[in-house]
Image (cartoon, rainbow, N blue to C red):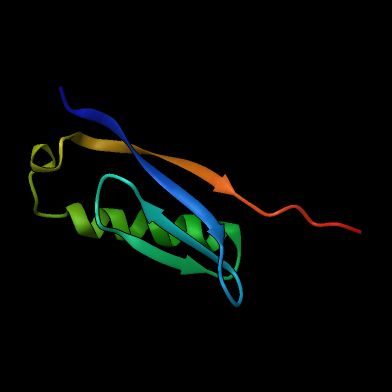
Length: 76
């Protein structure tokens, strides 16, 4: 059975911003803000799957993207 969604993990970058990487497919991107990294990852996933058969990746056609945020707490 093919998966209905792609899991993406977002964490803070080493120097600045955020990094997002997909678990099921080889897609990694970055952005200065959470909104930017989500948009960049959505675009990158679309481009990665464009012209490909999603079943080759174990996915349904037009899978959803599920984001998991791993953010470090900020202390005052």
